[in-house]
Length: 125
Image (tube, rainbow, N blue to C red; front, side, top):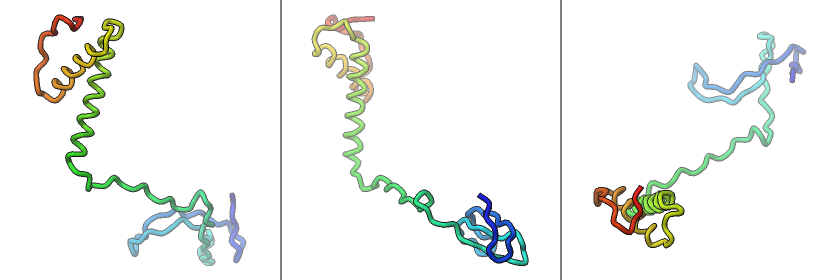
């Protein structure tokens, strides 16, 4: 959209928002008359699209370490169960065997034990 200066009739140009070289302060975008002798400026109209949106709140750093550790344990447990289900899909009829393999994965993830030879009731691949 072309905008003309209401004082001299020349075309106005859009100056993007930026930082002043002289003062170092931020300024919003505005229209400026292309005729230097005129010097007329106009602020951009505020529309709902241009209205500043509030920034999302950053997560609080006040979360206790035990909460993060519990979250990590739950995520590892879910990952272990998912992996066990993928490995044993269609090969085991009861869920106890799946949970047993999941527990082994969980222990291995946390380094509590090294992967051992599978027991007889757990299918080998």
